[in-house]
Image 1 (tube, protein in one colour):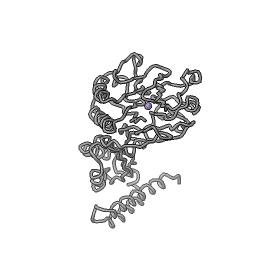
Image 2: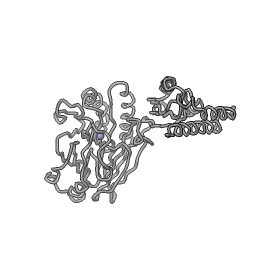
Image 3: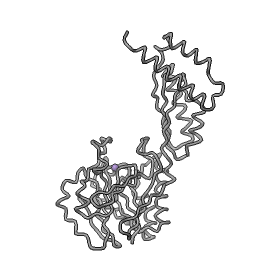
Image 4: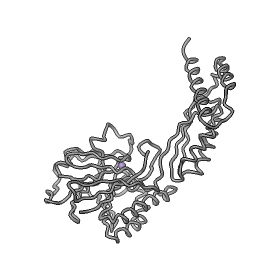
Length: 366
Ligand SMILES: [Mn+2]
């Protein structure tokens, strides 16, 4: 029976983000310690680029060394990001005592009754049918460590054109009698059964970018062997914070309603990445841009990273439009006194929808 902490896609970056990345890493290591894990498996993209790998690998190995001393083996394969901008072959680096397997096409070893097939990231794995992977010993558990896409998640070209990952075929898992596939690359966690294996993406334990795939709790997977099949559970990494996205109708001057901003500030935590999308018709997009910059500045003081996007349209043509003027005058007459609460929000939305509708009609050919 063995216990494995499975993580991937930490994307440790030097510079302003280093403190955050290390807080996430430290929490993962604390978990491995408190769980008394036999293995910590890092399935690629531990570093965000080759230069981050070069700059920080010694510091990171120092952090991992303490866990190693507590008899947890650390197994790490490079993902597609470690090779970004690489000026030398990753397999030439030693991260001792971390078991770093960068030598293509795979490295096989057995430890504590678990057989590992470690597959460093490659642009493709086409030759795998010729790989001389030893037959599985009866009674042992086989874990494949892979940084790639598979058929259940690959839905066409990767949207990160400059950091594509290879695609591993379904047949791979059955051919090499894999029980558990410790996958990396996809940042939202998921488990699929492929060719008799449980193929698990633990998801990134951090928030890497403002994207829907980074939403929800950030987790690592704890795997326990010994039963009929591996038992999995996910553990949230609190230091990761959350990705939070808000769509707000802007006032005519481009500012976000204060109550909405206060709601965001009450909800978001200091480790969060917050994205605000300001929508609607505004009088002057330059003023709106300045208001957006001020909002970004304000939120930046409260959260780890704040992004404010303008998705507005200028009302210049509209204000010359008699219907728009009349509409705004009517609406101003029924503007709620309280700018707090749902009535005001509904009023703001009604005004935006009305203006957008008038804008659309005024562009129709006569
Ligand atoms: Mn990746």
